[in-house]
Length: 256
Length: 260
Image (cartoon, rainbow over all chains, first blue to last red; front, side, top):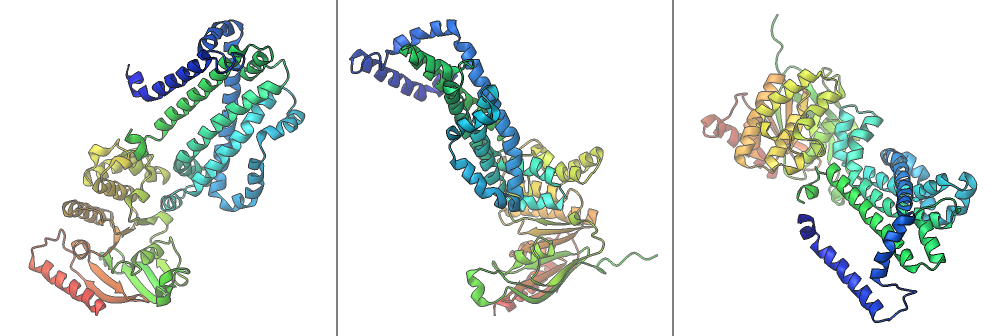
C-alpha cells in the first residue's frame, strides 16, 4: 500500500490521461482505426501474449541491455581516462563531437554493410550513441573532479589506474549516471527502430509494432507501443535504484 | 652521545621566492612575493599569521610543493625522503577526505596505499579515532557529519601515515571554541608523539597562541615579515595565566606594527 500512497500523484495523472483517451473514443471524435478504445487495447494483450509478446519483450530487452553493457564497459573507463589526460582529450575532441552530431539512424546502412544484418548490428547500432553519451558524461565528470582531492591521490603516489578506479570514478559517478540515463532511452529508441526495419527473421518489439500496424491490428499496435514505454519506465527505475545505492554518500541522496 | 638539538635543522626553507598571480585584478598593487625568505625549524609548532588575502595560503601551498615559486626555491629537510612526508591539509575539510568512503575507510585508505600492514593500519586507525573522539562515526559517510566532526576526520586521515611536516591551512575557521580546543590538544599530542613539524596558517590570535612555538606575522605587498616571535613550548596553554597574557600582548603588538 505504501507504494501506491507514495506514487499517488503520478498514478492519478496516468488515470486522467486514460480517461481523456476513453472520452475521446467514446465521443467518436476520431475513428477507432486511428485511435482504438483503451478497453480494446487491454483486450488485445492476452492474444498478444499467446502469440509472442513475451519473447519479443525478452529479445528487445536483451538487445537494449547488451548495448548498455557495451556502452558502459567501454564508455566509462575511456571517458575517465580522457578526462584525466586532458592532452589526449583535446586531440580527439573535435572528431568526437563530429561523431556525436551524426544521428545514429543515419549510420544504419553503414553498420549493415560493415557488421552485416543480424543481432550484432542491432546491438552495435544501439550501443554506438549510448557509448558516446556515457563517454562524454564520464569525461566531463572526470574533468570536474575536485582538484584539491586529486592532490591527495598524487601525494600518495597513486598510479593512473588507481587514480581512475579509486578516485575519478567516484568523482564522476553523478555525471556517469546522467549519461546512463540518457543512454537508456537512446538504446531503447534505436533497438526498436532498427528492429522495425531490419530483416524479417529477427523479431522484437519493434518488429511486432511494425507487423501489427501493417496488418491493421491497431489495438495491438497501441498495446505494443505502450509496452515499449513501460520498458523505458522500468529501465529508468532500475537505473535510479542503482544510482541511489551507489551514490548513498552524496548529501542529496541521504536526505531522501 | 648527546640528544640532537630539537630545532637544529630546518623542516622547510623558502629561499628568496617570488610569486605573483598572472591575471588578478589586484595585480595593480604589485607582485605578491618578491625576494621573500622564511625557514621553519624541524620539530617546531610554527604559526603563520596575516590578514585575509595576505598570501598565507599561497605560501603554504608553495611550501607543500603544490605550487612552485616563480623565482627562488623551496627546500625540504633531507629527512623528508618521500613525497608524502609533507602534507597540506586544505582549509575545507571535505577536500581532504573521499566522501564516498566511510570515516573508517577514509582514515585507513592512505596507509593502505602506502603499503602498511593490515594490523598496523587497524591499530593506527583505532588510536586516531580515540584521540580525535570519532570512534562512534566509523561507519558514517563524511557528508553526514557536522563541521567539527568532519574536521577531525580530515585531520585523522591526513596525519594517519605519520607525515613529518603538516601544513594546516585555517583548519579551525568554522569551529566553536570548545571543539577547537579539543582538536588542538589532540593535534599537539599527536605531533609530540610522532615527532611532526606543524605549520599552522591562521588569522586568529587565540589559535596561534594555543599552539605556537614560533609565530611569524606577514603582511603588506610584496609580503614582508612584520613580526617574528618565539614562545616557550609548554602545553596545554591556559588562557588565564600571566604567561599567556604576555604572549598575547606581544603578538597583538606585533600585528599592530604591521597595520601602522
